[in-house]
Amino acid sequence: MNEEVKNCIFLSRELDRGIASNIIVNEGVRRMSLFTCKECGVPKLIPYILEWHDRGTIETRSIGGGEGFRSIILERELVNGLLRGIEEKLGISIDHILYEGKRKDSKYYAESLLQGLKGKIMRLKPLRRVTYIFMIVQSAIIGLGRVQALKYKPGDILVGRVKNIYNLTLFSADATGGFEVIEGMRARAFYGSIGDREFIIVAPWSEAPEEERLTPVQPKSVEAHAGYHRCGSCGIPREISRFRWDTKNGKIIDTDTREWVFVIGSGYLNALISELEYELGEEIPRLLQEYVYNFYHRLAQERECASLRGLGFIKARGLGVPEVDNPSMENLSQGFYIRNGVNGPLLAGITAAVCDIDFNKVTWDEQEEGIIKIKLAS
Image 1 (cartoon, rainbow, N blue to C red):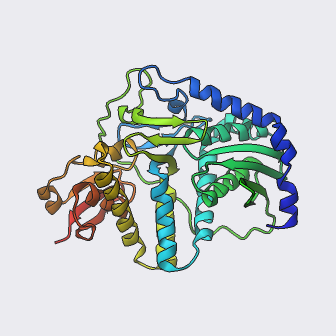
Image 2: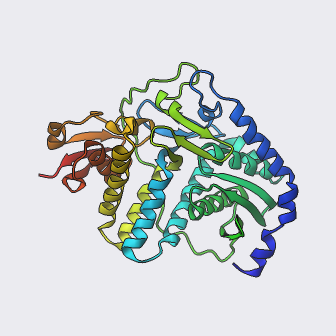
Image 3: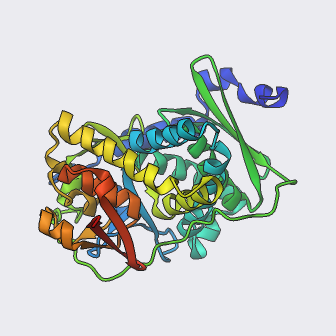
């Protein structure tokens, strides 16, 4: 980290005093935890941020009322462990690939969020600080962690202290993508720590290279019926009510698996796997399938999670709608379809884990866009 960044970071006195935006964010997060649905306990802001469609997809709601951004819910340790495992297996750092893909994913998300006249108004210079505060609060709600804004100057710099972040590299890219959309210019992030405090700085990047590959593509949605049992008050799928929304710490905890889960764009996962496969070889999808299998099989066996006794749990997470929630060996031998399936290797790994069969025997095939066939290898 260069001297300019160190000088900029800290502002420790400002941190200890607490600047106005910190007070607003802290108070906002505190109040969020107070307002929950009386019937299911989910924070009341969730239905205003995320929409669960009957076809089994989750979309973020746009401020401007335009098309939403398809998202999924995954375990933090699943994602971080997978990325560490790929690096260890290949013996190289993939941070640059992770960062660039997530930056673009975050840009598309921010653009979808700030659509229309309302979105344009929120990007006006006098209102940008409020927009950042809104996005910081939203990050805490969807499980990405906590951020304190320390310094902001329109078109020049954004400095934040981060805590309980789901992944520092990916969140730095999230911050960069959001900055680029709000400020209307290319940017880059620096991150590091001083003692036990972690920080992110985002600043304009006039010499940024041209955009290349790693472009997240919204998966096509097809007709499906997830069959959600919804809360009669807020309309959220009942399965989501078992999550504990620790908004103070920016976490969502699945009380069945006891894992920290978070919301991430579905297009990023596919773009990342495609890019890693392009750069590093065809073994990447199989590495994904193997790691996903090991992760969920361990949870199912060691923690005896009720939700992992079948595939029904993937519907409320936006991962897809299986033809059968509890596939038999006959179903697996003949093959069954998962509509609006988000990723073949991911779903093949989950299927092998919940069915307790060797992951090497499970194959996937995208029959057409939006429909994935899972089958035992012949």
